[in-house]
Image (cartoon, rainbow over all chains, first blue to last red; front, side, top):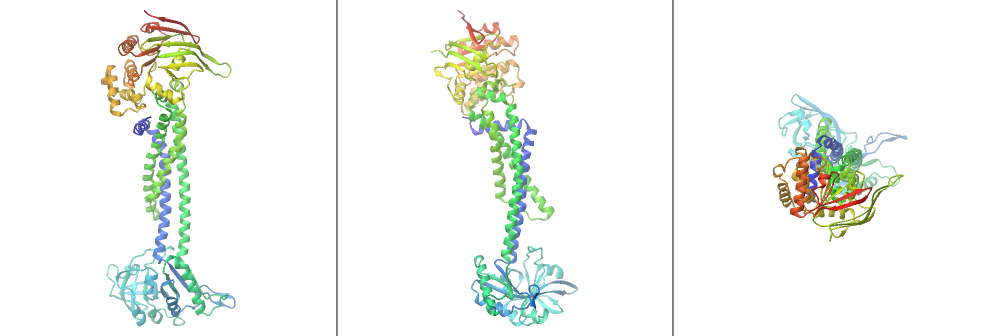
Length: 409
Length: 228
């Protein structure tokens, strides 16, 4: 029996002696592997981006919104009724065991002024709970504190986009800005979060104490009502439990019987995003499947060329058999040749796919993720294709009669 | 014990309408150390007989013992091993691998015998040196003359120390002067190294180098003469 090293040497020489043909055959595999790598990179990039967005939205987050107003059978949009109160939020925090933080909020789009600059942004009046609920972190300065809410202090924490537009390169902490002509001290700046799943800039935001907002800025119809209550569940598993507890508690507080229609809605945003992620995963799978068709076509190309090669080299096969090559020696030699084609094609294909996906990512502005798993998958698949499509030609070569092969012209 | 012993060998090629009877009962025995020439016109069956003796083909009927081993019932791979260990081939068309150097061509039988690279190289170089081709080891067959190519082929047939050398029209593609050189080389191998040589030719002056001439006609042996 002949050794693997010898066989690889023989295969490489055969491939080198016909460079153009070897390269063209390889091209099928290069394109196939490249397509698989690039498609998976795009798909996985998308689903990773969704994961990041889920994280940036605040993990394990529920949003309680007031219900729709009903007047004489005519139902208005969700949130038109002001049924949620600050006390509801405190009750949720106090009584729902699955909840770790709550953040009742009011919000509005308001003009901010600093010196001769002005900027319109969403201002949230909220409580310190918002930092836990949305996983916000402070880059400089300090967050909102409980005493800010208690004392209705005029302080604000700004997102980076607001800072950029009002202050440029200046450090905003300690400066005074005007929100609806009311002076506020900037006490903190948030870390950058980037856009959310729906493309909204999450850094274009200002947070002020809830009480200050209600009294000075956003002034509500009914004192003590809030536009939404953000809730953080203690863990991923407790999300549904928290949802249930909030539903029960608020129905009880709002005196709604078990059959009555709730005047609020609990929305599970994480679940929404998980659905989006699931669909992007399906998308990745689909893209990968389509790309692997081209890998299959590349494999058929290998088979075709190997069949031609076997016929062309009938005499060589005859000589090898005459000096003692056994069935397996011949089979191994041709199998190794197609495997070598597939493996070199696979390596080049991974490189090509990587470059392509990075280029697509740059041009289209998509996030791209080339995972080691995708590379291994594409590479392994190409090697399998080499063996699978190389087998028949190798089998054919090994079954030749030595006497016929030697006489072949 | 004879090196080659055939009994009533038949070879029939099954064509669609008319089967071709290439060999019709050949019974022969060749002793170790003999130098035998097989002669006959084309179509006489001498090449078919050669293929069977060389274990490249199997007889349709009959028995063949090579070096005491029954080979007519052997599997493909066992026959390959017999060829590797017992038989060296020299062909009319040289049959060298065109993309491999002279040295690599000579190494080929040892590759299939699983001899390690170092020893392989050494033995191949020795065989080439014996053929006076030490300085041509790295040349490709296309860079060698016909006589040199045939000497590479002879070197290849010797490296595994096979007791039998089968030469199928070894001088068919060579000019007279080179033919005589090659034949003298074969005579020397037979005389000095004790290698049994079976030579197929249709030229009587080539056959004259041998000690025994067997003539074929219509798939049968018609004469078997020994020189004294």
